[in-house]
Image (tube, rainbow, N blue to C red; front, side, top):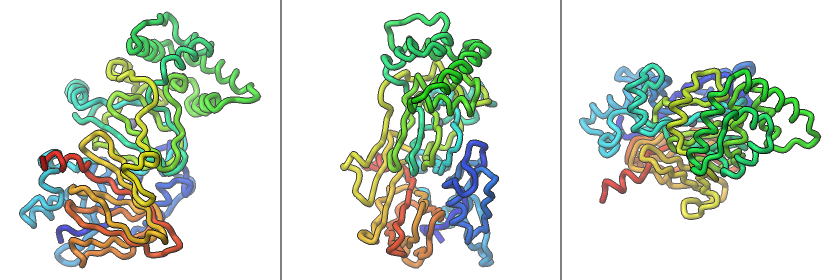
Length: 430
Ligand SMILES: [Zn+2]
């Protein structure tokens, strides 16, 4: 049984901010998968996230035959444990991966379909995560960091990192409603200290004052004949979260619209908010989120103000399209500066109907985003999978040699693979 590629059955999360019915990429993927599990898409329901991995909140299930040759579903991590026990080795997860990350699956892979903005948030680094977990275990439920990468699959709007200081200063001086929401703000020479005081004063300001100022801002902007993209963004955020202080962060954080294929990496302490669009997301398997706005949930202002890096300027875009060293027409690799994961993209067309996968030595999860494709397992040819299609999700054990081939030359194939970051294997080879 071991070393074979197995299909995964994955769970969707129907959060309120998700896109409705088949407008959602998540729903389209579930529908593609429907042949196997009879998912029916409800157009009145939101489909926000698809989770691929072994996170205890929604573990993916391996569909396999048991000893009586009956089909059964078991959690991905239990499957890995069972297979490794049978083989008396760490053949599935890989020895180096177990040494580095223990028995927990090292990453969580997701698809997001966003209709209304998610909260403005930041994630702690490993050190702070341990402190928060110890101090407030009811709020911060694990001691891990949560670096994230988001790869746009449709035009994707986000706020990410602080704008250059001169832009922020200019808005404070020219947007009267923002100015009035920052009582007692003193200009400080130290950029980081100054940003910290802006964030703290804004987040601690009287909520009635903020509500009032936002209302005036909305009234003023909605009367403009030629609203700018930023004016439109502020109006949109206001309509989704009227009175929420997070609306003002449109003037403080960089506003990005990623094209499909572009990606952003969210390091610890970088404030960000996803606003709309669809993306593939990969992260360390943690739930540690510190929120600042655009949310009815708890805003932990003191923790947030202390943990932000307050770096300004262009955020960390990972853009293999303009970085030829890691891309070709048919292969893009998104490699963030963390050990847990990287995301690779493969594109098969009639010109390039076959491709060898460039997998790291660790375990991987593959998602067929579109097209019809076969996975040829060159380590175990008897376990080839010949009928994969939009929505198929596969678990690939460590050290698998894999080749893809397009099944229908008229339909291009797009595959995303999340895998353990290759650099941990290079490090161990030194
Ligand atoms: Zn985040």
